Image 1 (cartoon, one colour):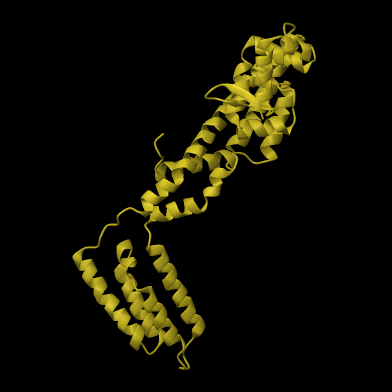
Image 2 (tube, rainbow, N blue to C red):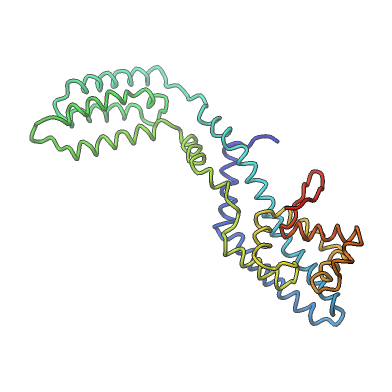
Length: 312
């Protein structure tokens, strides 16, 4: 799979942030809860949906409504993994990009101002005199990254140390230090293009893409409420919510299976004890259904490439 570019990574980061912290997932869960409650009211009031038929109908509604959320979660999780696999190369590409060189006139102006500053670092009699030549040089540099990287920082530090040790009465060391920090900050900022700064920030915050795409507690509780309302799982606590949010592809498989009448009936039957362990053990088809349930709640795992199910 092709590596992502930096602008694509920035866009995906914003998508994930909006979904996780910007209210996207929260709004979807609240809307789903209201939708499910409304549809269950209709199902419960219909005499056709009594007993097992009602349970199957509620499970299918749960699958349709919640499946959309899990689908979005799954797409974002795939993007998150792609970012993790692309971030380093995308940042390296941007940081290693060749910078536009200054014109010959710009270079000549820089060389002249740099020489003036270098002389001042050795001859200036006051800090104000030194920083005036430094500021003149920075004005020539402007926003040209190539020129900024040519500035002799060691010479600046040597000149600062010399004038800062002056015994003159007007030598304000706190002002000197503030000016030095201002200059060094400006040089550090100017050594990279805006895009390179973005790349550095992304790399420094790469842990963002290692974190799950939900707010623990808040979103888990919202999903658990829906799960209990629907009766959709044998284990209706936070374990299911956690798995649905952290492994949406796995949980999506379970939701897709609920659209099948036979599987929805099996889930309802297992939940209410109408289908026993003995019956499951005797039927290879029921064992496959049971595997889907156990994968959905984390007791087993599945290899999507081979469809092999193993103990978690």
